[in-house]
Structures are given as structure tokens and as C-alpha cells.
Image (tube, rainbow, N blue to C red; front, side):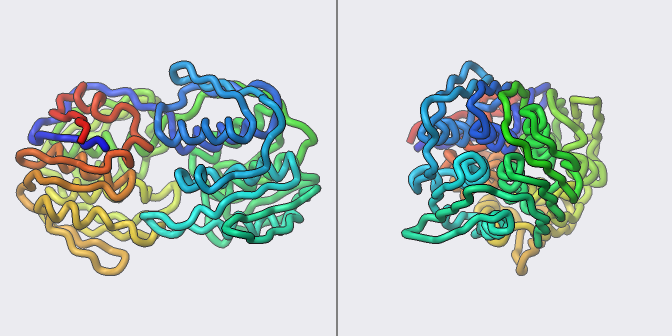
Length: 417
């Protein structure tokens, strides 16, 4: 396995281009299962999760061609109504094939995804919704078997605005008979991007981006061409890194509206923030102030940015706190930041942070994707050498991370162990 070596203390300066959103690209790729027509998806990032999805779609029965950031999906024989454990265990988003395969084939068998480093994240909300739409579900040998010869529209109220459940129900409802109404739906930009794709395919989806989404089922869907939205979590990571290293960074090909909560907190901390329609410039002007955050579903402060924010606050004079309300067990990076010298203490679902003057480089280990990003930022500001292990987590969600950071002046490299 590779590791990343960073020699800290360098300010990040310059311009960096953001990649397409992984969390938008995955359900859009899976939406290609809804049609036999050709589907062309642009601005797809080169990431491990994308590779897994392509292998997954190939296994199910699609032919995939990837040239640069463009993925073309074509039909290649009959679709298999099965998602085996070997694929699902590598990427939880694989469970999204339930919706389109149930809608097209009337049956699907998907391996249970199991636990996760940042919490169990069960799929019970997905399954309850399919039952309301007329599906029968059985659990056999670790697989969820779902049968619905004809899905029917239903009025579904989520007890929690789950992104995955919203996407899965959308993917099922577009070919269901009648109208489906989703109440308390997730409002993330990735949901809007998926709905835009489904409408390009001939679906009738309204209300995406609000708490109530209405889907009027159609008999058949067509191919599409679509460019994936920018990655808002990558954007947030780079602007926080700019502030943490006392730098001056402009990120391009992004959408400031998608990271409004993060930018608002950066401004409160004292960072200079300037935006255009598709760029964000963050400038360190003076010592930052501690700012407390509470994670929330969109449009609140993203749970996927909690770890990076914690790193930033670790070197800000004064006390702040970070309260995690979305996922349990998402403080595994705390122990690693403490190894570097951060003054952090966990109390239930809240972390108390007392800023220190400096932290020192040391070997650390990424427990998940965003924890890995937080440790990279810590390495950028630490004195001396930091080694980040288990960087395969980072490869799931950050395209060309070391290359992009080097263009901004970081002393960072990847080496094979």
C-alpha cells in the first residue's frame, strides 16, 4: 500500500481546478441501468469508487468506455438482477442498483453492505419505501431479495432525509405506475443533479432540492448526455486547507452556493472569502478566531467536512467545539490528530478543541476518506515530516490530490511502502 509523505510549513498559494462530484457521478452512472440507450456522462472524476462502479455496471450487463473524464455506457446483453457481496462491500453506494433494477426487471438481489468506519448506515429506509411501492422483501444468506412485478406510486415520508434512500426511491419511481411523493427528502445538490439526469431521460421529477419531491412514472426512458456538478466536499477541503496554511488559494470550476455553510463559517473565523459564479478565493489575512460548528444535512454544515474543520480549529487560539449529528462513530481521526499534538477531547457526540501554537509531524493513519483529508491538511501545517498511511481511503474521493497540492506549493509526495 502507498503512503503520503508531507513536509509541512508551506503556505498554499495559486489556483486549482475542482473535479466532478463523486457523490453525484455514482447515482448518475447507476441511472444508466434504466435504459438500453447510450448514456454519456462528462466531468466524471478518476477515483477508486468510480472504477468500482464501472466494474459493477459491467458485471450487471453494461459496456463501459472511459476516455478522460467522459464515460459512455452502452447496452451489452441482458441485465443481471444481482449485486454480489464482493462488489457491494467495496462501495456502499452499490445498493443504489436496487431502484433501477427493481423498476426494469421486477426483481433484484443485493448483498447487505454491512458496517462502516463512520457508522452502520443501514438501508432500512430504502427497503421500507420499496414495500410501500408494492415490493416483497426477504433476507436470505446475507442477501436482500426484492420482488415487485409492477411497482406502484406511493406517498413516502422518510423519518430521516437520507441521501441514499432519496436516490434509490427516485431511481425506482421513475418507471413505477402512478405518482410517487417523497416527503422529508434529502436536499443535497447531488439529488438535484440526479433529478436533472432523470428528466433528460424522459422522467417527470419535480421538487428536487426541496423537502418534497414528486415523481410521475413513465413507461420508458431514453439515453442522455450530462456533465456532473463540481465536487463540493473537495472544494470545501481545499478552501479549508488554504485558511489552515495561511495561504491564498483560488478554486475554479466549482459552485460557491453548494458550500455556502462552509464559506460562512470561514468568514466568521476571519478568513477572506471572494466568490464569482464558479470560483472561490480564500485568503488568510489575520489570525483566525475559533468557530463552533454543528453538522447537519444540506444546507447545513456537511458532516463530510467535520474532520477538516477540526484540523483548522486545532491551530486557532481559543476554544471551539464540533458537534456531530449525522453519523455516529465519526471521530476516529481525533486520536491521530492528538498524535500530532492537537488538544482535542471527545464528549459524547461533541469534540472540544483548544487551539495550540503548533503541531509536529508524525506517522498517522486514515480511518476513512474525510479523516484522511483532515490528516493531510494537518501534515501541511505541522512542523517536520508527516506520513499518512492507508491512503487508499483518499483515492476513493480526491482526484490527483498530491498533484493538485504540489501545484499550490505543498511539499507532498506519494511513495510505495
